[in-house]
Figure 1 (cartoon, one colour):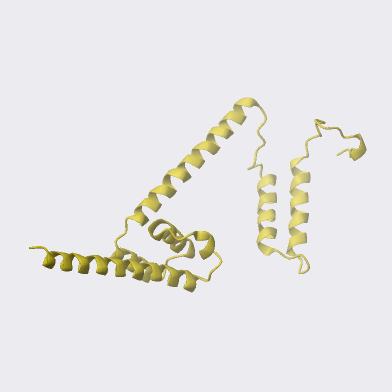
Figure 2 (figure 1 turned 90 degrees about the vertical axis):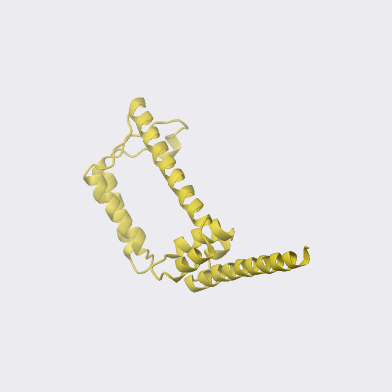
Length: 169
């Protein structure tokens, strides 16, 4: 590929397309940089290596004309809509859990931190930004505290109705 000096580049200049082989080689080299002990990020290294393999197999295709661009845009929008539709539905279900169901949810050891964060946000309106920084056990304790608070409010409501019923003739 012919190199163009930066001094000759102007805004709007169209650069020649990089070949798939050159891109894959670059990604592999970059993955090796991140695999080293000095600059290590093994997850990034592995991802770059997988991306290079995908480029070599031509799994990733460049959008060339307007019809392809529209199709890509539609696909991206439909994926976004599916994500938006499914996430609020789960949040709605979590928000409607009874206190007993929340307690059972918390007792399940297979629950992930993400699921606990979703429950905290949907059911108890706890900001997830605070909880994300905490360890799993601390997140669990925060949710249990909110759960006990709701139990207390329910008990107070029941007792106040009893007292109110005994006061009325």
